[in-house]
Length: 274
Image (cartoon, rainbow, N blue to C red; front, top):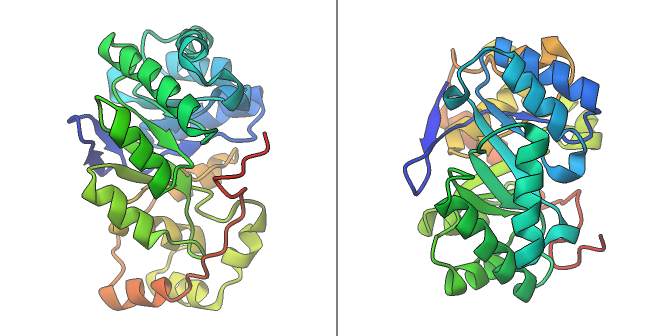
């Protein structure tokens, strides 16, 4: 398992398990399956409604806690200094953990709220409740606001990223600021069929004797972008982590780059209606 070093020295596995839309019992079994398959990075959020079972699976796995990288997120209705302080404690309680490895602001909900929320996360970091802090669904101007008001530079920016939305400009910007880009919906979520049926990706899957998802996840790894494919199927969970025995050529990486359409699935980040 490859790990990336965040700007505060914390090491984050480059492949993790996403748990969005995983019901509590599904999340419990998925996390156990993932940890058994060698994953050491689990991503959840307060709004997912599965923090309790994610935490239980981690505790039941008998894997030393320090070997697992656990992320959660502050939901939109809990943003603001005081609300965020409470939300951090609520998440730790649900997860049944003394700390998490990363806490993110889930969505941008205005500059003032972002500043207040991030201040509370900085305090959580200083008190040891989290090993790193960051943002999610933030574009350049959102991050600039944080950088202009923060003490601690965000360690991570988690955004929608897939072969049809490659985020090269945002990736390079984050790199220039020492912020690790992390991609969710790497297989295009509910439009996964568009990825699975892509002609080029199928050609590459045949060439490397891998599946299309494995080609895509390897593409993330070689770009240096953390990736969190979501699944509740034990076989798929295991397969998604079987990407360490091959390497895409520079030519094949360039071919995948040409698939970029700048096509976003999730809501535009300046106009979040929830």
